[in-house]
Length: 389
Image 1 (cartoon, one colour):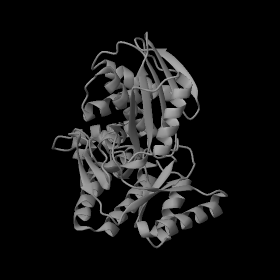
Image 2 (tube, helix red, strand yellow):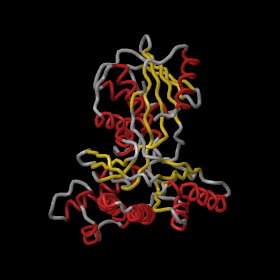
Image 3 (cartoon, rainbow, N blue to C red):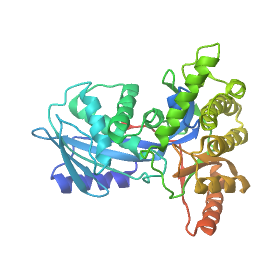
Image 4 (cartoon, rainbow, N blue to C red):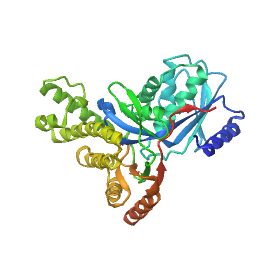
């Protein structure tokens, strides 16, 4: 189910701005990361979900080679040549679209420009991957517009390359895969070594609360990339000291980490422990979900956040406060930061019947501590990216 209010607003704004209707419209959701933090680029496992917030992209072919792109919330237009795409230093949102178009052009023919506009309702900087939603909605719409065929994994990799080459963030594939592979009422369990994913039912008695702390969430300033480098250094070390092959941290157990970490710098060793532990939590979480043990699964979410806070260092005071508060609230089964970290949102596992009371308690506690409430929204696992008829 799409957000008809946002869709109708986009269609009206598109017609008012360009003077005609689009040829194609697509939609891609944001995502929550439920379990498995910074494991994607370490070839590990992740539980995620597409969410009921997302981004629409509308487009129509244009005469000539000029691409006109409008951010529908700002109603600001930028333009560039479809045959000569370069990253921009200003209006950074355009780089996600540019990078995606450049990737599509490597898989087919982009023979003209387009008139495009995007609009969504994912809070920016909330850790819910508005960037991947923009990339995937762009990719679906423009692939349809230009008659370019790409499978979901190839499209996800195009979005990832856009992040790397145009936005300056060396992300994994988690956000793009989650946006594409989501199903209503299900989590997405992904193996990022094989890039194979499967839907996992989580039950009707489950929803999530997104608690946007409104604190800074900026990964392109180098913090994310530094963590990735530390993980790579750690994997390289274990590849030398262990007798079995180590391609990534996915190949290292926590027991092996504890024995052979001594020769690593303390910070590098600490960073490596986080994704190693996360992989083990995801695999255990899959077993718990199969048994219907939601309390046990929620406990793994709490453990995951503690690992982020203590070992990886990608949390912040506000996120820690939300998670610590959730532990004290009856009905809150689990909580952790969602996404790259350093701010943004925490995700809380609850029964739908408890969502209102848990949300009110979190908002009240946060407001008392920081002088303003956190933004709490109910999140339900939702359908993935698709073209809109």
